[in-house]
Image (cartoon, rainbow over all chains, first blue to last red; front, side, top):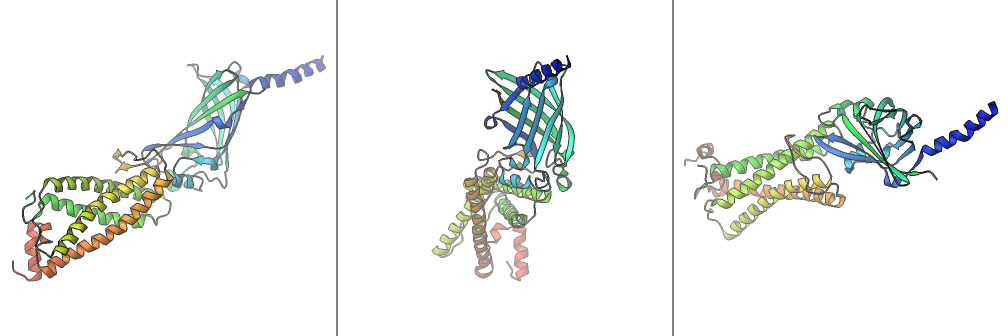
Length: 184
Length: 193
């Protein structure tokens, strides 16, 4: 009896997990952000990141996102800014080369919007972060859009002399768009 | 007198001349200093100031050129033909340079994909579609070269004005100065008008 249960769990559990696992097409996926600098919006992105996505809209209890970002791959289409951002005053990539986000639970807001609560570790600071999740299945794949707004000063990005939010806005909107395909 | 007369530059033309001259001196001083600053918020603010003053100069120069074109310039002081040619050439060069300098700065700022706000009051559009490394390098080089050419032509211009005033004793300099100043200048020299 006990053996039978263990057997059932061992066979079905991986199946259940695999049913929700997706492969991320890195070439067609993006992790972008928008901030403000001197009163103007600027856009940036992280060229290299690794996302593990387990998601089934019908079974949010089993959903999980686990994302690791190569912070030094930041690109804001401005040479001087891209040289400054990895420095000690900003991301300090020498000490903190990677950011990590992992979900703790998924829930549905009153308006039906799926929200993913998780923890973001960035520049040595771990804080709870909630992503708004949009999942659009298409054929054998799906598009996953996530969005959140962070406060850069929560993570000590641009502290000290750069803390002036009239020059560099505190709010930074982060948008991820992942092209997913089913794991064969 | 707002308008130019046959013998004097009017107060509008004089205001343009001296205001732009002063702003360009300030711009040169800021420009040479700011590039030496370390990467701090101060540097960002000083650059923003340089850009705002530069845009102001550009706008003033355009207005000044419009005024210059609808106004007759004072009659030229009599001088040898080579001097007249040199004067005309250097004045033409000055107009071109004070127009091209702020423009090249704006172009550099655009190609480098930096923000551009006039004294933080309004946004000034980019001349490029975002980052353009080749154009950026060209515009920066142009900005620096044009600056040093301007320094050289301004030096000639100042020298010529003083030479006319102290050596030739003509009114080339005086007619670009407020009328009241005319008497003071003569008094200082001990020359009775």
